[in-house]
Image (cartoon, rainbow, N blue to C red; front, side, top):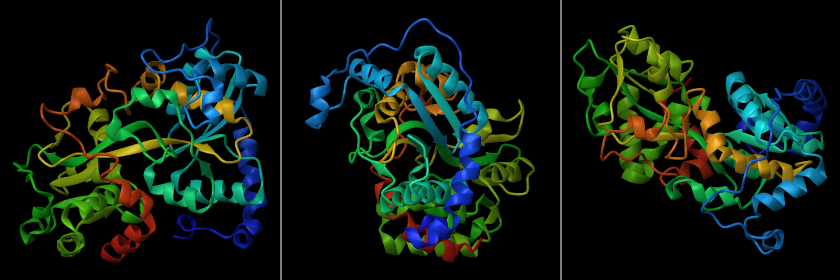
Length: 378
């Protein structure tokens, strides 16, 4: 897939004007603004270094960022691989905290993000200050010098196992990728994913096409470092021989289980949480859940970098995490009380895989995608 590779300037200059021009007209249309009385306070219980500390490599305080953002004019352009409901909830919440700022949120089709953003970066066209995207695009951002490292004071509010030690990516929301089964078919989900390669599971599994670089790609990839390459490749061969139903997206895999077309789908928690009451699909936590993160990135060409960092910190605050949870996505912060919170879903003693477990995949997505595409041609 060309957009997932390190694209060259000569390739992108040809398409830059059309992509950047048309897309940015939509981006500049403005976001929902809700008036409010006060700005967000600094994170409680976390250090608040001075602005000078930022130059020395420390995280800049909320108060310092507020002052700097006001000096910039508080204009923030935000691209996300999400949905309009997420954009509205987050925009409304941020504008309530900072009524003097202007957050313009643009939900992009995931498959369009790499080409659009890399083109804007290479050609010098106007681009986002902040990007929200899953780890599957991290390698593309780094290859093409799209994003920069930044320390955020509110990262201290997130579980350490979710953090990017390189400080490019900052977690904002997650889903849990788990086996989902039809409760009416008497299915027993194994506790070891390797069992799915057994011929007994032939014609019983569904997951989204790996070329999506989405949920199945993430779930399949996490086991490579846990098992070693030889065992992992043998497992993939077994799955391939078992005739997995490859669906256009993870939601369609969930639907295949709901209809009884397949017994088990590998898909994320939000589909089960959003299904109609009484639907015969449940999540199994017998296998270690795999998080499907969405991260916040500061772009290298951010026009308002301090305003962008203020927004990124707010996204990791209680108010920001609550706005995310309001649309059914799982917040990273463990103290948010919402049906989508991990504390509400995970049985006692069950812990999901960590960001470290997914680090090799997110840093080498191209190589993983090549292997998986050969095993599961789209």
